[in-house]
Length: 262
Image (cartoon, rainbow, N blue to C red; front, side, top):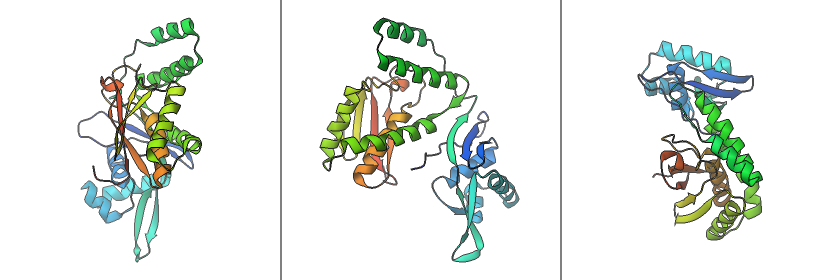
């Protein structure tokens, strides 16, 4: 499963630099036009004419930027089997994150967490503190690594599923909740089975993050996507509706099949 790209060009907003992993190394995308092209290509293949129509840009402009993205290895192209004169373009790289002046994080809680760790000497508290410190430090520099965290969570979820798999959905969720509790990841409560909707209290990933005004549980989301994608046999996507980092007193995840209308 590829990490979803979630960047968009907004009129009047501060410049955002997208980070992409290609076969030639990490590449950056700063041009608003290229960001828009990548946004319309997300999860699909489009012809040149379709990209022009979707972006409402001049053909010469789109042609120039497509050429640059191809040269960087960020997108790929392939012939249309029904019409050899036409090509389809697609994203062939992984979206790693973004650097933006709009990403801010003012934090003063790390000192309290260090004191708590030294007092209790709990290894789980140390690793939580380490992850939090890395993440907050990057956000304070305007760097968002949520796509990387989501992909890492998905990989972990694949391994976890092998240990908790069950043909029965309710049993699978109970095993997932037990794992969360035993490893101090939080307390899972089921709100709904269709679509699967889970509430998490004391979430290890975000309950001590500063207020960000947006969901912050990218790692958890990736783990849940892997577990339920494996269980149902089709790709699932996790949407976080509530989060401690948004000022809520819990996190709430809805897990639906990819493409399922909300």
